[in-house]
Image 1: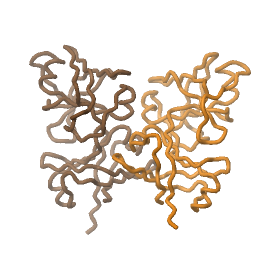
Image 2: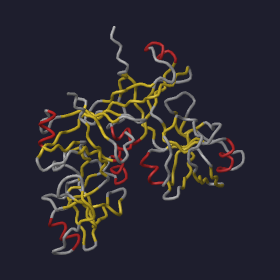
Image 3: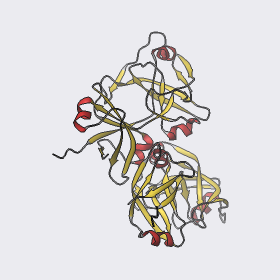
Image 4: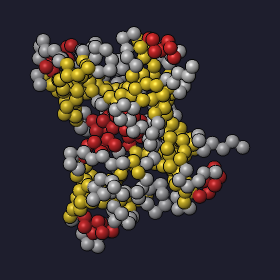
Length: 192
Length: 192
């Protein structure tokens, strides 16, 4: 009856979520995001559209937008990216942007400077409700996940996010993925 | 009699070691490296001198040289850096460069293209012989080291390197440091 709690591990490169208002401001009134490819989570997609982001020290020319549009604009970067931009965002759960740094965002039809919204995303696992029930995992629980191999790591402080809108997938950033030697097809095991 | 095995954690940014021959080629015949600041290991130092390195996809303009000069030239970068340069170096112990990628190195007095020598340094701990004996640790042993906090991580596959020329210090790269939220003054604990 052993049931190893294996989870696919996905590495999230820097990306941005835009509000409808900011899609308008950056791409023109009435513009819409168009799907380049679907993501692991239902109805989420990488858009064809990209923006540049500009910090006090550096910038990134092509930042992928993830759609659909959300309530709040949010830029998710790695700590390495943060040094390049010259800002110091906290590690936060998606959507929790109070008190975070802002950034200047430039699109083909205009630019926007947000007062807050830049985070280093907290490592997390999306569980479908059925997965969470099977493994006895609660929404917002903190887990430990082992990724083996030549750069083996146990990630602590992995946030469980449970919804019947989610598909089972662990999300870490590029620093974390590189530190653990994660490649496409890597699985982690929930050990606690 | 509990003796917690605490080790200071140092994050190594990208850097290069040069052979005497390459110091000559890059800085001029008879040039010598000059000390900017000492490192954690006795007699090792960060030099004032820097070089640029150039891969097929990108480059870094100012790469710090660590002195003194060594037998072999070796560039140590993170996986993130490797993507920027467009090369795919393996994770290796320092000095083990057989079959690794080369790189073009440019200094103020000339340039050199090495055929091999680029590595992602394997995470490791320098132990003075006395520390290793006290804790029952053998040279080349693989350890597990926990770094706590908001981005808590257990690093597996941490290589023990023991010498009476070493001072106790754990060395990880910037991807690993950022993934674990390491800041100056962070300690790890050897747990296995």
